[in-house]
Length: 79
Image (cartoon, rainbow, N blue to C red; front, side):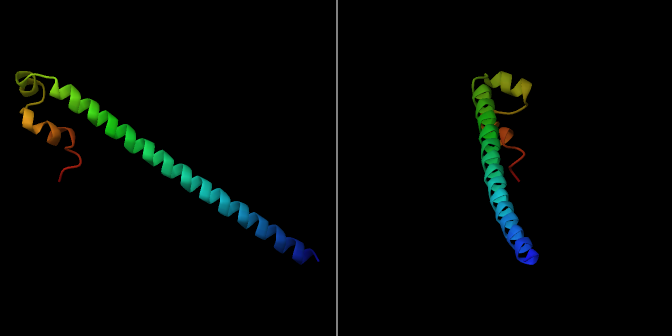
């Protein structure tokens, strides 16, 4: 009898563990989504800020031309 009770407890514990893992997985995915969203927003802000500069300011501050802004902002992603 004790063996059956132990078996049922393990099944219940396994089910709880599976649900817990699923919840953690979903929360990690949501967190990753918001991380990507924040990075995209910060890059958009940087693009807008740099587009508002004059050509002289771009050349002085960043050493780039206007047509190089996107490459500069995404330089860590461009191979």
